[in-house]
Image (cartoon, rainbow, N blue to C red; front, side, top):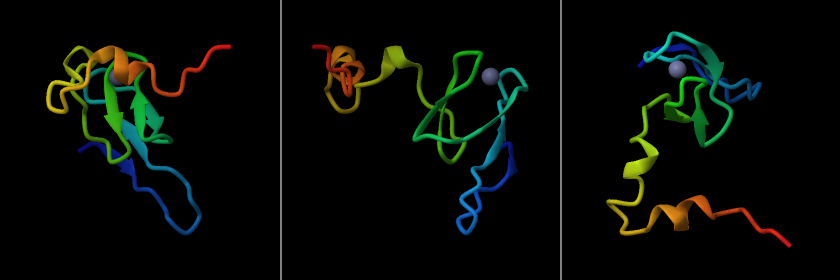
Length: 73
Ligand SMILES: [Zn+2]
């Protein structure tokens, strides 16, 4: 795992991560972090399956997952 700097739980400075796919560096701020190249990583820097595969294990549809948190008036 290409973690450049580990998350510091005392100062809450997020981990710095180098994307193995494109070499960009970014902080792992969120539960899911999307690199500029389009790859998704979790907070531990582990690559997530492409979004087209999300839901295969849970039985949820992609629409269900992507609709979370989007409430339009
Ligand atoms: Zn990348």
